[in-house]
Length: 160
Image (tube, rainbow, N blue to C red):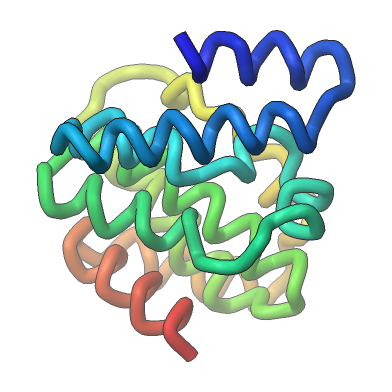
């Protein structure tokens, strides 16, 4: 319910309130051990990437979400979180890393999930807007990575 209320707040322009509700939802999910839900609410960047990063009060929720999703083997969530991390990498100038993460997510989505892009709020178009030769080189490499290797790469780079 808190997450639904966060979506309402976001739709009405209340980013801070939406983030507060997501943080509370994450706290409760953690308290009761609902790891699948926790991975979804640990990524408040879903609200709006630039504003959510500016408003975040510390921590790396997006990498925590990826780690949780990897631990519970939620491949769809991993794809969505890799797209988010590719967008963050591209926006911060790490074009090859962005391409690598995006390529891995793209390969997983097309080869194994057999669905159109997962209903992630992070659209491939926003990542592809940063495409250049460095991005495309990384994208080709990413398409060859296992999903597990892509998760490791994302988590290693987030740590640095």
